[in-house]
Image (cartoon, rainbow, N blue to C red):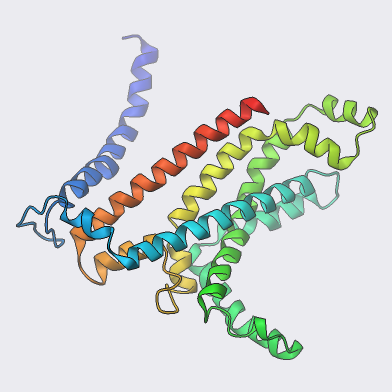
Length: 286
């Protein structure tokens, strides 16, 4: 083994050790417990696939799954459209571009719980006050229905992550050769044509990264859901991560909750890997 290989393994060994002890072994132990009646302290009976079969008739889990998928699809589209639009805006030759980048990115630095409580105040008190002042009924009683609770979560998520996704798009937009833009200008292309025909295909790799990040973030959202709606009203805005947490720590059904978590992991892995594969294929076509 040469010095280069030795230094490589010396640097990577602590990370591999941490990954194995903190992620791999807990996941393996958790997977084994899903076949038992584990209550968090002990497992006395082997149940086979009973926990997994029960999930398919658990209406609360199914409702949370449908709500999470609906939220994820909506959030992914809006976050990426807003993030790309902000990136295009701040890469223009504006005097306040650097200031705008800071302002747009700042929400990402605030914790999810704090953001949730801030937006809860805005939706409940701010929207209600404006609604009464302007006599707009749809602004009153936000978060009191499943529909407004859903859009409240979407707005919060977009406000927090659009700035972060903007940074990814900026890095790709700034990497586009200026000669291509100037050539398109000489050929008479207007601003929209330059963006759609030149810039958009060249930022295709950014879509793969951004879609993966927004997808994984949307599916595992928990703290914003807890702070903003806490699953209410009547569990109608309870997302999958919160439903699994409540199964484990409110109903103390640990093995069943662990089985749900395994299903959740498999679902997110399949969706994420499929998305990356399709986007990589699309990059070549563009």
